Every structure is written in C-alpha cells, then in structure tokens.
Amino acid sequence: MTDGTGHPDIAFVDAAIECLEDAAGRTPSMLTLSRHLGLANTTFRRRYPDIVDRLRASEQARAVPAVSPGQVDSNIVRLRQRNRQLTSDLALATSSIQRLFIDNRSFRRQLEDATAVTRLSHRP
Image 1 (cartoon, rainbow, N blue to C red):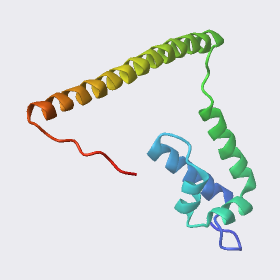
Image 2: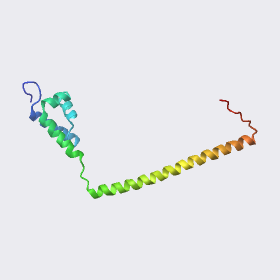
Image 3: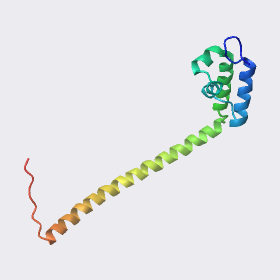
Image 4: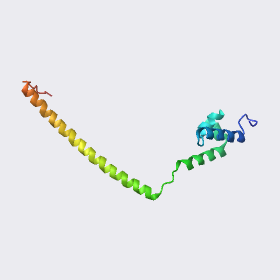
C-alpha cells in the first residue's frame, strides 16, 4: 500500500486511476489523481514521473480529434460564408441605426416646433 516514505506504491496508484476512470468515464487528470491520493500536485509529479507521462499521453490522445481534410475545407467554406453574412448584417444594422438617429433628430425638432420650445445655444 505504501512504501517506506509513506507514499502510495505504484500498484495502489494504478488502482486509484482505475477507480477514478470508472467514476468519471475517462482518465483522470494529474491534479485529480494527486488530490485523490492526498498528495500535493508537485509531490505527485516528482514521485511518479512514469505515471505522469502515461496520463499526459492519454490526455493528448483524447484531446486531438480525428478530422479529415475534406471536413476542414468544408468548415472553412461554411465559416467564410457565415463571416460574409455577418459582415453584411452588421453593415445593415449600422445603416439602420444611423437612419433612426436622423429620424429621431427630425422628430424632436418637429415636436419642439409644435410645442414652441426655445432652443438655447451652447456656449463653449
């Protein structure tokens, strides 16, 4: 269970990895495993470098999804079309906001004229 230094032996660490894999459905992170064992993360990394390498390799294999070049090309085309559409929508929204600003200013002046509001000039 533990070696002479009070740290868990490799068989116990492997059993903990299996336990955490069963619970989470995936390989645990080094931090999760070290906390589960009651060790500081740096102590775990220093004491069990082979296990750290094995967990890191497992993370990297899981993190890199297999994507075909054709799928990447179709995603690029789709994203470029979406980008053009969003750019067009942004230009339309900008012009709509400008038009609303002009209409608002015109309506305010008409309201002020109709209610006999006197405008005061701003002095710098």
